[in-house]
Image 1: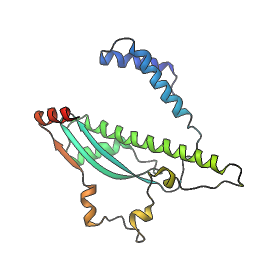
Image 2: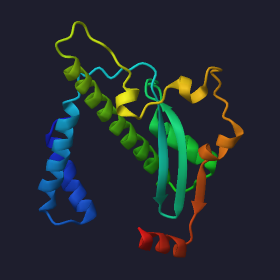
Image 3: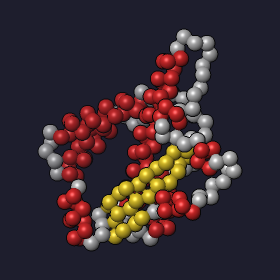
Image 4: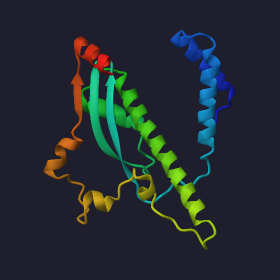
Length: 190
């Protein structure tokens, strides 16, 4: 909802911070503008799709910290905050690097944005396919999008959130502090 003139100011600051040639201001501003236009096209779309729990996967390397994790995120819990979650996970795992938390929050938000875009696209497709029929038929977007999980499939009929022992390793976070040599080798592979 900020005015678009802030986009150019942001682009100028980014170019200055990254010491890029001034020609990049226009390219950065255009990229931001096109993303804002796409985002604004989703305004007013019905995003509620019933219960929707999605898997979020982290596979990040920030400086010397490597973190891999996966967990379930409830899209309809609007009190969930990626920044707060990232702060708590860093605290729980004893991660000292101040850049890891924002990277985790960004990775979560990036995946949530992709899921939202897929959901809106699926909803539009469903409406187009159902056009001409009487009434509106609401299909769970978990089937077309493929990203949402049905809680019955996830937890079974017992409605237990306790994981089976064989699944513990799948949901255990991995945090490694890498040496300079390991970082150099990883960067060479990437």
